[in-house]
Length: 457
Image (cartoon, rainbow, N blue to C red):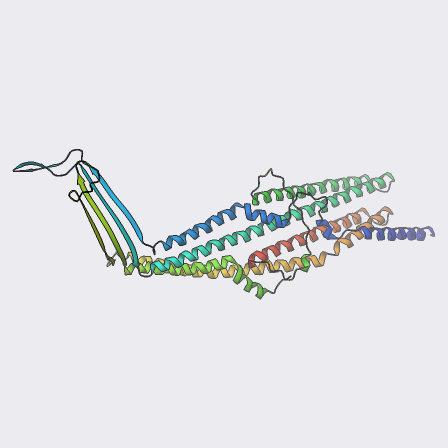
């Protein structure tokens, strides 16, 4: 009866001393994201975004589209400038035609006939279609560069999410590796107890199964890490065999201050390129109605031309006044369509319907962007709450596992208690690293949904 209290006292004293030492060496959950022995050639998330901005094929295509829209502005301006055309013809008679009269046959033409015309035209009026076209060109140009910005924002968000996925996989490797190491350590403990006759062969076999079951999760985490780097290579427009590694130093996501939801909506209204593009589409649809209506009104064009014609049996271009003639003229051309089978009326109605479509699409875009903003905002707040609720759990779970392990050595708890303690630590680490990952992804999504960095410095 006197031995048990002393034994328990020794065990408790040993457990307390070891637990204090263990607590001093216990890693915080954030350390699961720490990158050890980083490749000196590794790139940061910011550098990955810069590379994507230069090399990504979607951005390159968007740049070309913006340049195409810019050229369309010049195309519309071409209607304002004079149009100058030259035309000419040359005919050589192989077998001249002859006229038959009572006096005999007479040759009707010489061997060489040449003619030429130079004409300059200037569109003076076309019912407002020219000015409407110029405005449409400007809207197209603005849309092109806004689409480029939208593509850049989307690629930035994709790179961020890919990098955060790689970081999550790296953290999961640490979690699964630790879980496997704990399972192996417990197998050693159980084998030791088996040799002492304090555990059965069934306990040993059961723990071997746990070790084997822990290995696939580690293999999957390592594969997910490599797949993440492979996908990042694709986004950066790199060859799959190119060397690429990532380094990071995650900031405290909890320290980010985010504006309230109404402020975020206002920011998105001003900065989200997709929303501005939808408003420009409404303006362009309205201008297309004006262009279609202009066909009802006709057009007025000024012209000036010079003509030349000449024939000769010896030379191609005769210059003497006997064989050639010149003429010049200036004037106005008025073209008024009186009836075209309701073609113009139908075209106007089509453009009016397209304008109504553009209005609906603009409203739908605005609503969808507000949904995107609120969804990202809700996800960020939810992830932050999960971080806050789990940030101290890992340390507690480690202490609990260490204490349970000591008690198991001394026969005070069962193997099932030891398994439960290991499982609690594993679940705590998984929930924490997932919450950190989800918070960074939600923050990146919120920046994309608003169209700019929303963090308050």
